[in-house]
Image 1 (tube, rainbow, N blue to C red):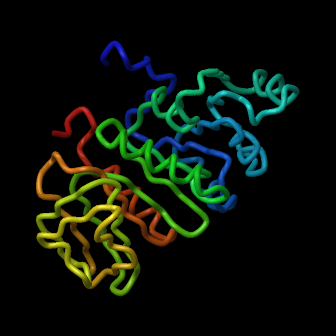
Image 2: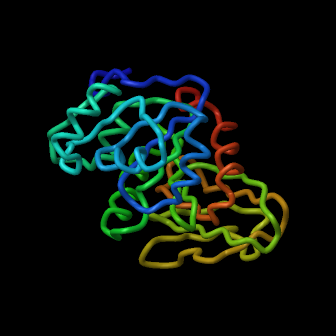
Length: 238
């Protein structure tokens, strides 16, 4: 732990951690996966937890989306950690204060495009600290700068979207291979690629590449979560 990193408010060693924001997601899906690990409500995500019948372990954020009377009630039922600074998003505030082998984020996609873009920006800067999957109404999304491997059904969509300049060494199992491709947001991107085999593997050229996003239908939530949990721990990763 370096001096710039706060001591985690939740330090989970084996289970995934669930973050709940104020964007769009399937409430039934949240209720299904919340028992997998500790739940952190991120500001207005407090209300989504309440709708889903979930009592979070922690409420964190600048609290500008939580009514004063609800904040008083929350303090009687969970740990509350307000952070007033406005130089970071509530998602980044949460990521700075938790640690887990994998993180599921509900409510950070959809509703407002600028909020979704801000979430992508945060994940691109935290690829070496966290394994995060965001869950939307239609998609699951993981941002990485390293290798990616997942079992898929042939013909299912898998989009590969560069957040910066990314040179790919090779891929396998994709209908349109990434072998030797250089991708960037203002150049070639990989929207609506698809699985051409039962296992998809993606290899950037080296470990100094920019981040890229992997998007699949949200029915791949469990498979993608398994992939993230199977990765080396962040402390062991190169």
